[in-house]
Image (cartoon, rainbow, N blue to C red; front, side, top):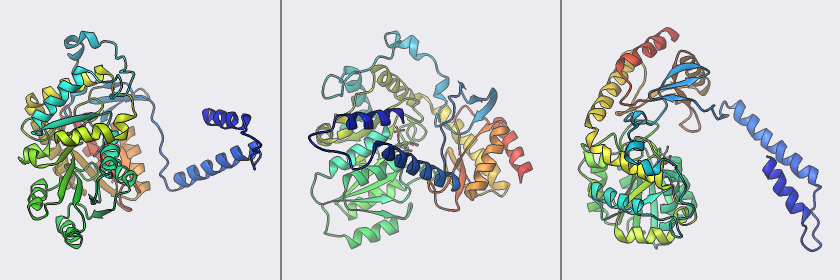
Amino acid sequence: MQGLMYLCLEKEDKPQGNYTHPHPKKNIMHDLDKQINQRLEDLAKKENLRHLSLPYPTLGKWIVVNEEKRLNLSGNDYLGLAERDEFSTLHPNYSSPSGSTSSRLLLGNYEEAALFEEEIAKALEHPAALLFNSGYHLNTGILPALAHLEGVKVYADRMVHASIIDGIRLSRLPFTRFRHNDLEHLTELLKEDEGKYRISIIAVESLYSMDGDEADLEALVALKKKYPSLVIYCDEAHAIGTHGANGYGLAEELGVLADIDILVGTFGKALNSMGAYAAISTSLREYLINMARPLIFSTMLPPAVIAWSRYTFALLPRLGEERARLRQVSRYLRSSLQEKGYSCPGVAQILPLIIGENGACGLLAERLQKGGFEVKPIRYPTVALGTARLRLSLTAAITPADLDPMLQMLESLR
Ligand SMILES: Cc1ncc(COP(=O)(O)O)c(C=O)c1O
């Protein structure tokens, strides 16, 4: 707020020409505060006001909140990599995480990034790969870049992540949303548009972060034969690391890596780092280097961050045991909750425990937190009205014995 006020005053201090502001300074700030406070009150009334939590000291699968130890059921460190500490031994030269100090097109490029891209492209069976600073940068960068091409329309699954929606909005491309995981609905929409578009981008996630269910990537790939204008844009944010024999995602598990035209993912979840990748064609890579604004106009990630991502990505094929444990513990929790009569759909390490109303969901989350379980409520409007849920997110470090006390607690709170 201070910064904003300073900017306003500075502008006011330097009027251009004979310009005089129509409102007195005081009223501008007053109205700004008034409107902001009104918005905050509205959010609070709807039980949707978000707060930043204090930084928690983390101890692998545990976190400490107000000096109380809680089992962390809200993170995305799906493979438990936060507990590994050999990186500093392998990379003593990166002990100080200095920045790259420039965007990649200026001076922010370095060999580590180029080598990493080659490794990603090879692993994900694509001709090329391109790094972005985050999944958000990537999704808000690629789609608007594609908007400069002719005859493009986007068809997005209704449950795709906010960053994909923001990318579509920024692109201003014509778009439509199909019912979640409903390829019949998608096919109807494609039929209606037949002959109208040269490029039909189908935007999906492989594993959906709110429902814990998976896209039918094989059926989508089969649809490409019928509709040659299709371009599949698949975000593997929650499946990279956890799915596939080598951990290269659901596309690997289903044997369709090379068939996904734009295969993207983040290093921010199972890879326990920061940044994102797109596995693509060489021409699209070159095009994006020229057209993707978040890549062109933002400082490149520090080399140490890329080195850490490269290190955890290289570990993936050797983490089969962690993936198996993650599947087992996820199955255990899902079936235990379902046996107790809870609605807990989905298939993977993300378990949505559907509660219904925002208030009830928030209250249950608070009680579980006090009981030693760090769970977060996900409420409307993030999810559909009446489907507020606890999003239980498991990692390979969590065991069934860690979860039993929570199951007992849920029983006693009914
Ligand atoms: C499907 C999906 N895509 C992209 C992102 C954003 O990735 P990042 O955290 O690297 O910005 C997320 C993060 O929650 C996500 O769930």
